[in-house]
Length: 476
Image (cartoon, rainbow, N blue to C red; front, side):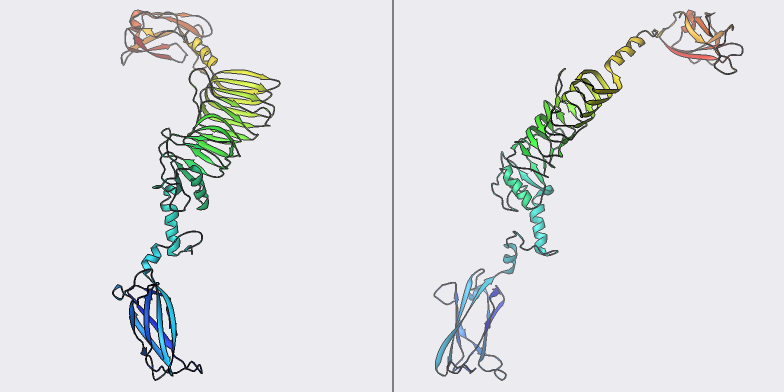
């Protein structure tokens, strides 16, 4: 006896029986062909009735079969259950056999399969490929999606919630889904304010748009954010855990364990929460005027290294202590150092350094300070003005040297001069005069005619001396 347990709509349903004597148990032909009735679910009216037929009568004993088309015309429907009731009479004794089966459409079964846990996850199978689409296709850019202001998802069903088209209205739900499907990226809608309520290790939180055009807020909530990366956020609060990273962020008042910052604006105070290495790369002061952001070295947290590379703007360092090593590299406003005994190296250009360190600190400066520039300007202000056109120039210095070694000052020489004005190809003797001073130095007093051109060159020459040339542009 036998019957399949499932039948596809449109295919054939085949069932068989083997009749036997109820008294002896031996196989025996039935008194008449067995009759059958087919019922849908628990409906009391049969959808089909009929008689079975002998199968291979010569080679079998009491073996009967029936083939029925499982079609809608015969009353079969997808996802319905069916019972087959067969009555058999042998030697005047009637007994019954029943079968149960389900009708289905294979395509419906495939598309309605639930992809959860480890189901349909065999390597290279179609089901696994569908899971990949579920997990990463609708999780666009390999991210779960959050919009706490206007999100439409409030659950944690994989493939349904926190997708690009059904964004989570709660960050915690998105984090749960990301962890369950092994995604580390969480996209935050611009304008959202996210307050962390649990540990966040190894995640990347980001928002769309080019650098400088992003805008979401992050309250660290005293949570462990070690190994996580944050992009485009305005950040405040306390965070623990090492090796967190912040990129293109606005840093408000924060306390953090050793972290790295890339292209960030600092608006308030960064307090170091524990000893270690802190890196600020290509960052800026976000404080207007003469004030400056503050980096509080924490004082008692232990030996700490701090690097500011390619910094722009003023900076104040508080609570520097013995064992702290600081490198300041960039273009600075005022650098203020408060604390004691630290080692600080300053490179680049800075307005001034206010060194309030006590004890035995080491402060090394290599670059240009604002006072240096002022000193240079004071000296250049003493240089002669430009040559006035058609105006005599007095006491122009000329140094003559001997041709033998091109170094030795030439004294006691009769120096002659020629002028070449406005592209002249031959020289004209100057109208001015030469007066020897000492050590090969001579003074030339020009005549008006010697400067009566827009562009000119003077050539000075003497016996056994190198010629001396000087070119100039005049102003009216």
